[in-house]
Image (cartoon, rainbow, N blue to C red):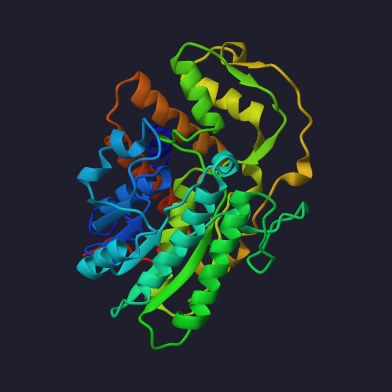
Length: 393
């Protein structure tokens, strides 16, 4: 896993300490994360803890077994509260006790297949859960920046080949997509009704991103998860749509965008009430079979035949690929993706191999990859790093 760090060298600040983007913004601050027991939430909780924030998590029990939350012992790094985001009084009590400077709302039913088997729960969690969080924020009397994380599925996918912009129409032809679009409508109407006026201390914005990969994901119907489970059991992965393409993105990429957005809200009202896309570069889009070939090499297979079987070649409707235009994040937040496709695959494969085969400590490896990502971003002059001004005093 250390190839990227060793290639770049250790970037240090003038004071001789490792550069930590966002450190000045989040160090010593109280931060509430809803959904911190999930995959993205666990990575975000550990990153903020690494930055010196006091992290307070509010979520149901982990949605999978195993989970990154348990494997990386995230509960040891946060003030952990078990609760449902639809429980307004319980969530409001947490806000009043903590008085956070930042809120990151990630709690959601995030699996598309589950939205078909339990559509009511999906809509209730994603729409009413978001509404309850918004309503609790109305009671806040101190300065607070709130980032609501939705999905690229909130867009009305009319299957055009170019990237969707933040001003494009919202919609959804399936329950999951519709629930994300409806959540965004709730955010929009609450902002106009209660937060738009300059006298409310809460500033809020929306972060939209697509599916991500990375170490510690155990969710259902994910190709990387299916691979790891099959390979650990000594089997091969059955492939039915090897030519399907996806914009593969490491989990740390959108998380850096959410952190940059939170910092921007705290510093200025310029982007209060706005939405931002956080997606990968165009070159990140690869076929499923290319992804498996690369992961198999990281796992240690000598040939692809050992890793998977192509059992069917279903035609793939290329126009159905939903892409994001991230120009707004570049212009307003100076945010761009940091990792190449190869680095994204390497970090993902090395995490699973390190933890599951080599016995690495999941929490230590996760934190090491966060530091590795920061090092790469600083070395490459990522604008969201430079805006922070360096290491906290």
